[in-house]
Length: 177
Image (cartoon, rainbow, N blue to C red; front, side):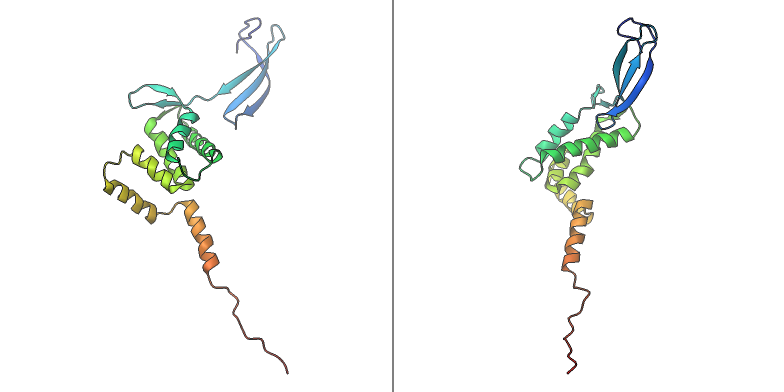
């Protein structure tokens, strides 16, 4: 790293720590030439390859804009959407690739959106997968019913347990008279 004070082409790392949910590293450096200290931030690049072939840096805000449209009028809070965008970015970064196809971003959005809100998922999937007929919607709804999301299956388990008969039997009280 070049020193911003004396332009010496070397520096020593004094301290490192993660910032921004671990997606960046802040390093405190010292120049051996002039003794000045300065900070740097390192970010692993994640570029998206668009259908046109152009690349652009990944932006959580773009994920939020698309998902927010699908969630319009649904009982989904902004905090939920921010967490969803973070999950999408983490999923993409876990691939270990520096460049991701735009199609993979859309796929990474579908699963957490389905867990968040199935109606919003259906809206997003209809645009993302370019539904052109009623049969496309019917097929996707059939899949939703056939394979419940983990959030819905957990809610169903809770409801089933509360509806289940009690393990205690109602025995009449006996008296020893």
